[in-house]
Image (cartoon, rainbow, N blue to C red; front, side):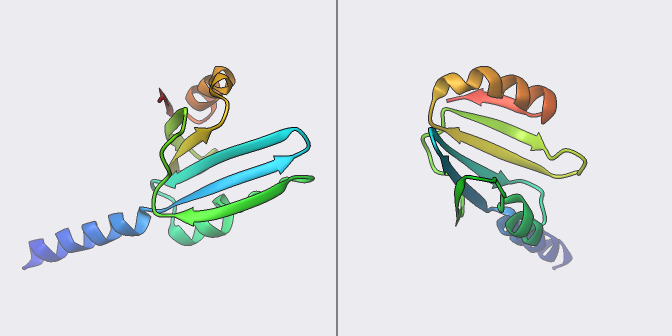
Amino acid sequence: MRCFAVLALSVMSSLAWGEACVVHTQAQRLDVKVCQQNRSIPPNLFRSGFCKPELKGQKVDVAFVEQCPTGAFGVCRNAKINGTPYQQDIHYYGVASDSNFLTPFCEQQSKGVWMSR
């Protein structure tokens, strides 16, 4: 019974972490869409901080989803959040040539693994 309780708790906690937010920002001649898939960020912090970008002069739309949609040209897996122990997967949509600067940022700044789609 004890083993079942531990298994049930681990399954429930992994379900609680299974959330993502699609962030779409627009400004003059700028249209960016990313999706942040939560890996280890506490859910309340993920929703209230990590998925609430404040970008001056840009229109920002955020939608919470269970998992990131298909169609990304690349994903930065296990991206670490600077100064925290938290990780997320960041899915990038739009212009595939952006991977030229996103790959080094992912690998060097975020200590993640870049995966092209």
